[in-house]
Length: 419
Ligand SMILES: [Fe+2]
Image 1 (cartoon, rainbow, N blue to C red):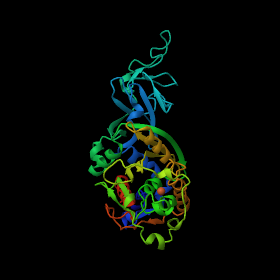
Image 2 (image 1 turned 90 degrees about the vertical axis):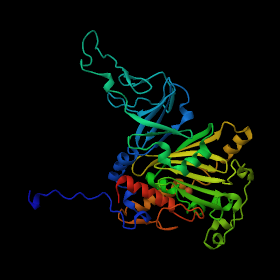
Image 3 (image 1 turned 135 degrees about the vertical axis):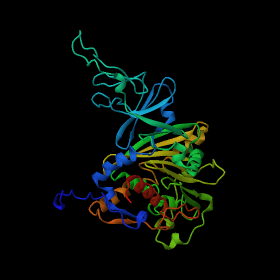
Image 4 (image 1 turned 180 degrees about the vertical axis):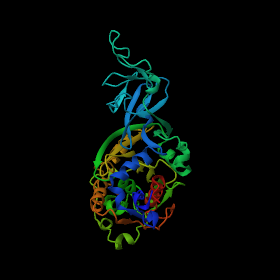
């Protein structure tokens, strides 16, 4: 082979700026090839994906359909009480096997050609396997054992069912790390009840939401309700804790420690000067359920799970990529089985704080699409993310930082091989 016939050197999909996690090339939010690679390397790679809550598949025969990246997945509990997860794709022609969000069935039957699977995904029967009246049918070497639904590994922690395609994913507690498991257990490791659920379509790449929920810098600037009514401000004691690998994070605040920092008056934070009052101030009545004085927390688990406890509003959010510039954001509002009727009522009332139309979440439904629209024509320009430093480290004294956003990119670059 002479020089003229040498194949062209393969260009990496993205040239990451030398500043590392303090820069993010806009190309990653709009490039279809990168989106495709994320499905394989991240969602079908060595991560634990949120599948559903254990209480959604509590009984034998329960089935819950869900998503891992953009792949349809189903979770079942078999007759022995064991949980299973598999790709919701018939081994015959690839049709969806389960069509309902939730069901309770003795076995799984594909509606197209009636192939039937046990709750652990083994192929049990094939319609007309031996043909009709001795004619037709499957060849003699057909072996049902070779045609099961594609399984995922399953793990549970704090009432959450996780799934992974990869044999390389470490055990769930190791994947989350000590600080994340401890805090997730604080909020979620109680007998849970679902108070309500909904979802919303947001018109942005999934990673913009992954950044947004890690971005403590924006919380009291974009969300004027937080600042005006002093629910969560950066002049309350609080901090950011990153997991050892930096992929996951916790952001927390203690409402009783508000210090009325001068910067809220001088930095053009209009909402700090609003003379507003709530017609129904009981919205913000809350009880303290923990002795650490933390009244607001947002916790992320890479790649696409969030657990929030704002005052008493406990919720799980997960966000599913629906294409390079579209994401479906699911909200599941929770209580504890031990809640009194008054406490349930307070949690329901406070569910107005977040969700698609939430008083402190409404803005996130559009701000990420503003970034999508602002960046789509500038793939070679990069975001500048240096608030609080250039590296991704925990900071338990300030949330005026983008450390957790940098932590996400640390994980992303590592798993995608974008160094
Ligand atoms: Fe936000």
